[in-house]
Length: 94
Image (cartoon, rainbow, N blue to C red):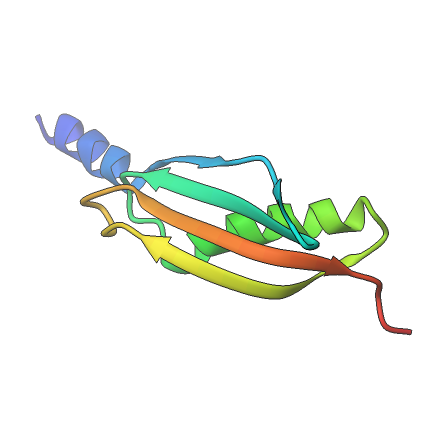
């Protein structure tokens, strides 16, 4: 019984996470989203998932992420946590 309670406690801290593909919005802007179902994931982690994907996307173009705007939705451990990131890719300053 104690072991089952311990396993349930660990499982409640682990969530299922996903990140969308980067989508062009026009005018040089892009969007990418991340979502975590369940668990005790911090909002910083949810946002970082999407920002990191956007940053990687810009790097494939030899650029860096800029003009980052983040919107979040959901309630930690009650509803899915979602972050939507809008950004542009700019040439690195030298």
